[in-house]
Image (cartoon, rainbow, N blue to C red; front, top):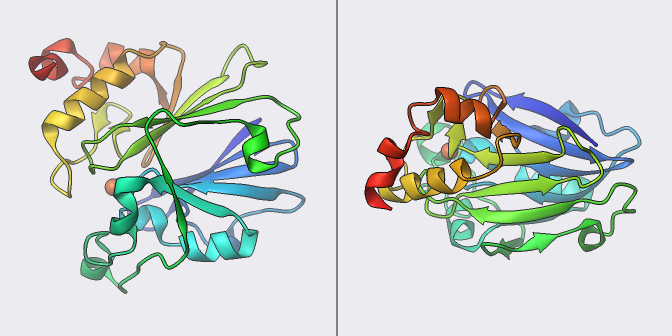
Length: 222
Ligand SMILES: [Fe+2]
């Protein structure tokens, strides 16, 4: 398993590609098909952590060119399809997702078979609803059971950044955000966090250094 990182545009949103053998899953389709090296790699599915335009701007193109399904939390799909709510209309050319998007639910789990992947490396993906930045934001937990170190990975979108958290004034809610942080803070220390912008971190690092990973910050409403 390998995680490839593709930062996009002036806002440097991270698109990720989880490569397992000769197959891959994409998280946050914001980089053009021509800018990524897919030599010998078959993309099997595309997850969207949330609907903001800087994370979905290539959703239709990548879905069509890789023949992959698009997936997002149910509540987020109407936002992806609305250029005002996804923020693109205010920034540059209005963009709305035209392709069908498969709705995800909190706690949904997937394995290689669900994406018709060969299963050369077993893994489990769990959808965790982490509202706050947007109401339909999700984090995607990948667990590769046969890898002892680096086998637990969380893609947090704009919920968590290294040392910081996402804005809650773009369709989100701070109380929801605090509950989502509490959920992530309760995860194992060695879970690697790949955020929607910036460098990767771990749950342990955030617990030690982030002012937002303190019970004083998130416990007041729990
Ligand atoms: Fe965002």
